[in-house]
Structures are given as structure tokens and as C-alpha cells.
Image (cartoon, rainbow, N blue to C red):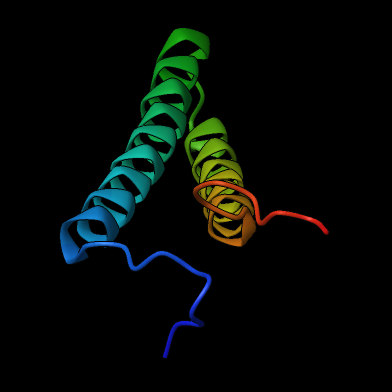
Length: 81
């Protein structure tokens, strides 16, 4: 239950926030996967080393960005007295 001094945010705001977060995560992960595929293809490697490595790093980066974005306060900061 929100406190009296906190504004109530419409449900559409939350939907937009989480949708954009999911889209950002998707872009970061796909960039890592496709970057790894291109490096493996460019270097003619027998095993997809860069695909695996960049895929894992991009997932870790996407989770880090998501957590950082979820922790960050939204909206106007409370007034200090």
C-alpha cells in the first residue's frame, strides 16, 4: 500500500517500464550472440568459443543492467525538510 506522500503510478506505467527493460535485455543478449557468431565465422574456429563466451557475458551484462535499473528510484525525488 503506497504512503500518502507517494504518487500512485498508473498500471500502464509499470507495463511500459518492464517492457522496455525486457527489450533492452533482449538487444544486449542478441548483440552478444551475433557478435560471437561473427567472430567465430571470421576467425574460422572449429568450436564456437566466442559465441559461448560473448553469449554468457551478454547475459550477465543484461542482468546487471536490469538489476541496476530496477533499484534506481523512479519519478520525482521526495522533498527534504
